Length: 165
Image (tube, rainbow, N blue to C red; front, top):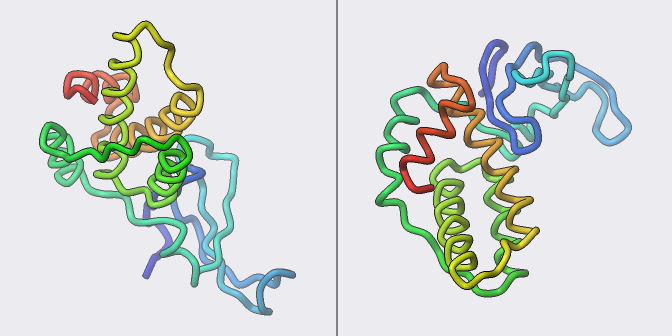
């Protein structure tokens, strides 16, 4: 159960604070539905309304600093999955983004890095679709990491850069 003051991670808005839980009527849900009002940490003027009964499907609690440090320490051992089909790879990227799963995001970034290096070695450019999803995944992962470790996004990029992601 979420409460006011909790910080949650969402796929579309990054780290958000739950500012209030309120009852609202909407055309898409029944009368008197409870909504969590989220305010993205990176954009304090925005508000996101999520029905309380769909919070678990749309977000998760932000991890604590110890858990994030553990994920960073485990980067070298996190397994990646090789998917050869561009279509299947894109579906997997979308799924990982929606899940907000840190270990899966790291695995995808490692795989993207490896694929990019292989393409560059063959004199080829990176695939635009991969660059697009890489930016989204990095934004979500790095913003949560920066938030919980109280570091700048640039410092987080350096941490992940030294871990061969």
